[in-house]
Length: 134
Image (cartoon, rainbow, N blue to C red; front, top):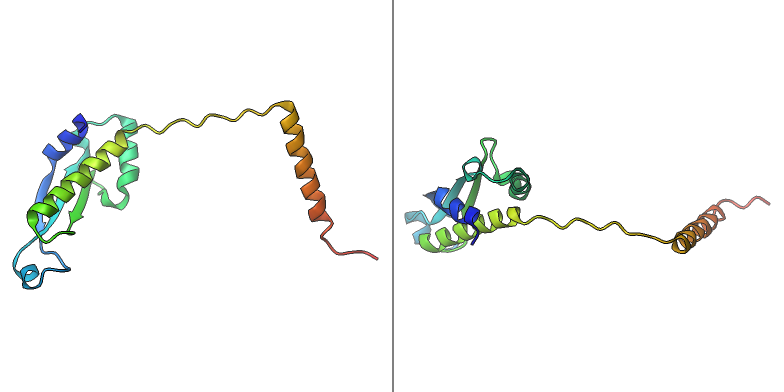
């Protein structure tokens, strides 16, 4: 696990809320869903990683710079807590991965001429599709 992801898990605030879904009467009695809040500014991410994290989080990021995740997949608090912590760590790790730069394709003169020739041929086909003037 990356240092930022480990720090993210330390900085998270967890609260338990009532969940919907399976669980029978247990759903009405026990707050099993976990809501995790992470202050992104406290992570001290590099600017590029911060912008990637903001894009990845999308609507889960608040105006104050907090990421709010809710985990309610499982019936127990502990399983939901582990799920939420794994998801938040994965989100931070994804933001730290720098995307590869796209290498610009290089065409030689012959290929360029072939491409333009085929474009011209395609254009004439389209022009000839118009109304026929007798």
